[in-house]
Image: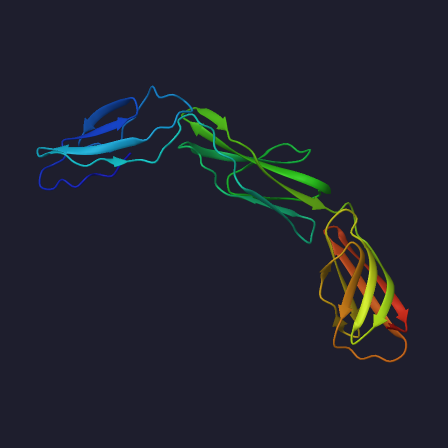
Length: 243
């Protein structure tokens, strides 16, 4: 398919279409032609030149296409949300000139779902999950399954837990916690009298710093951990150690 060429004072009488291994001509009133007999999986580039009474003009060439070739693999991204949902998105791959029918998207241990856009979401998963996306394309009445693109995400198996193991005083409060994210990514924070430490990725022994606070004697510290499956808290009351 092509756009009509300028006539330059004399109407276009025909178009000459050529490709590796063949050529044809069509009437100047047409703007497309169907080429048959090509080899599936082989790359072709097509050139079109307009002709009028003055002769044949310069040819314009198409990008290379592969008839009957399956789509390339899309680039897939999987992001775990705070509510346990996983957002999966992907790029549009090279379809090799075919028409996109849909994308087949699956998660580990689950069947394919048909998606017309370039994103979907999953819920109720746990552990390390591989998400796979394939473009399903069509040539006429036939369909082809493209190469797979994939991404992995790790989700918690259940709510996390946290325990404050020590509180140390410098010019800030250094709160050490033992964090169990329960198989997924987790963040921890500590708080005292309205002041809160920055959220920090945590697993095992983790230090949290509460800055810009003043205290005297025994105090109460609260620690919170969150993962995709929920949250948990621990509190500590005592006098911070100094060092």
